[in-house]
Image (cartoon, rainbow, N blue to C red; front, side):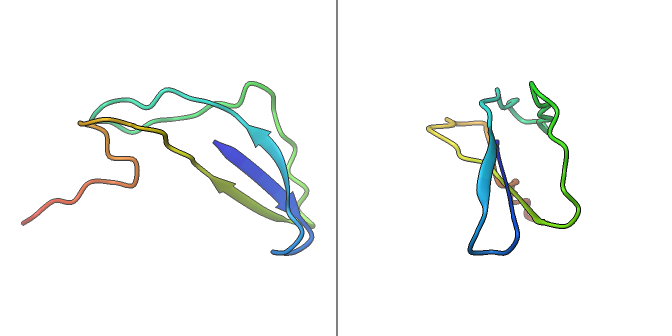
Length: 66
């Protein structure tokens, strides 16, 4: 999980870069090791980077047909 913050879209600084274990066939909650105080006057962006998550894991959600 990564977290960036900055004054605008072109000037973000990465403040958090933390690994986590994804749960198979389930939602995953990530609790930060160290709390991060959000500056309400700046943009906040978060993202996730996956590396070989394997079968049974759906990092961006799962497609269901009706």
